[in-house]
Image (cartoon, rainbow, N blue to C red; front, top):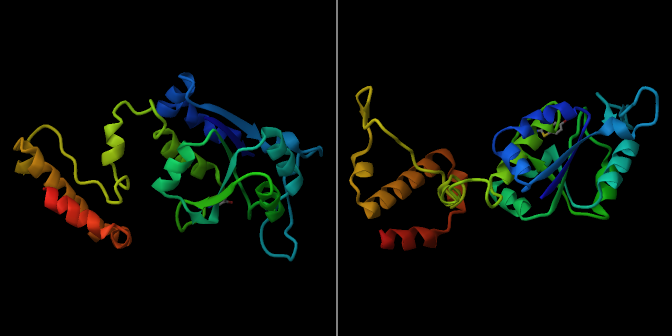
Length: 237
Ligand SMILES: Nc1nc2cc(Br)ccc2s1
């Protein structure tokens, strides 16, 4: 997978050298290039923003540098983190992990001139995505989060691929509580069933805990959890 990131703060992406993303890069699973948007400015002050047409607070990112930057990195799927984007989900991460070329555009100020998005959409898929109902200083932090969600799904990145099937949101539910040694800690015991060795009962306990946790914390997810899944899995256990 090739990833191009365009930002006025390329140094934000030093963390992408670390941990599993760093490993994916050294093993050739991932090729990441970070570009400074100011590369494509032509004035002495390397200006990337200007006042908004129609008035209002703040500044808007100028279209010219963005147009030239997107031309330079070529075609792929353009991802624009934005407070006005569609919610980014685990399903999106899986879809994007299948693609060959991702391009991330990091907005700042009040955002990027809309014509940049419209011009790109005329020649490649564009996704404006939101990470939540809050506003950041810019898209850089969101790109790091999205990159981690995608890269961990790439074949060979996570040692134990099984963890991908059991994790939260993978099966449309939140993951059940996890425990490890010691069996007793500050007079708090690990649930006995997890030490029973009865894998059928353990699977049932975990799914029940997932259902309880999801119903309590994310009723919105329960609303779309396939009802027949409940019946089918209930019957098996
Ligand atoms: N939640 C988010 N806030 C922002 C702000 C800017 Br400016 C650019 C992208 C994003 S994504």
